[in-house]
Image 1 (cartoon, rainbow, N blue to C red):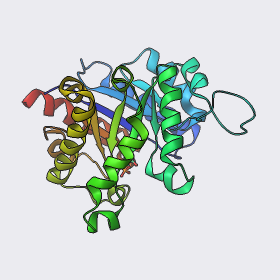
Image 2 (image 1 turned 135 degrees about the vertical axis):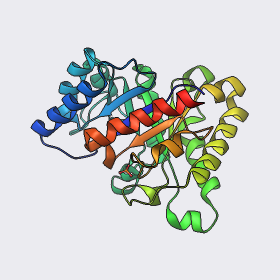
Image 3 (image 1 turned 90 degrees about the vertical axis):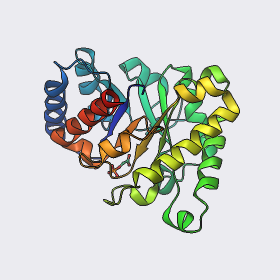
Length: 258
Ligand code: PGA
């Protein structure tokens, strides 16, 4: 089994002091471990410098939660991919369901953000996932397929190889209701097959497909031992160092046991 990727999405949480405490606690917990798992912390923009500075001397990476689809110019309130790259950010979440819902992000905008990030050599972590009604109507595969094709399938194979996909069923985000390992695996396999049809077997195998949605220390191991689950995008549980480190440990164990 290939090594895992575990990304913490802090969303709009923590004050500066708490952000510093959390980053320090994670740093101290993992600094002496020879980790196979790649760890990324995605704080809110104002704490990115804190995290990029600490990431320089640590075995985790700094990620952003969003970026602009534009290069530069009169776009008040926006942050460009080039600005993030200049700070040492190496990952960026794109198309999270909260951005689609509250900020009306369309697939077209998400595809543009992916392009801006790849131009700056930042790895886009592109989110997809169905809402509850779509799953209940049996439309989840169709919805996820459309989201992936629209956000990513304009990319050349070479560029696609720099992308991470995160499957996050919207009904599982922040609700405490996790997809079962079988539900996650079924969708992850479906996504990998889509990638294989478009970009070939090797690219599909090497692609990272993360699960997100109420992943926590008690269910992480069962999710991460699924063949096509390459790690997790962690929201609520990334805000507590103990929980987040336990999830990283689950990722390490899942790889070592297989
Ligand atoms: P959650 O969030 O782990 O709190 O469900 C995951 C996410 O939204 O990335």
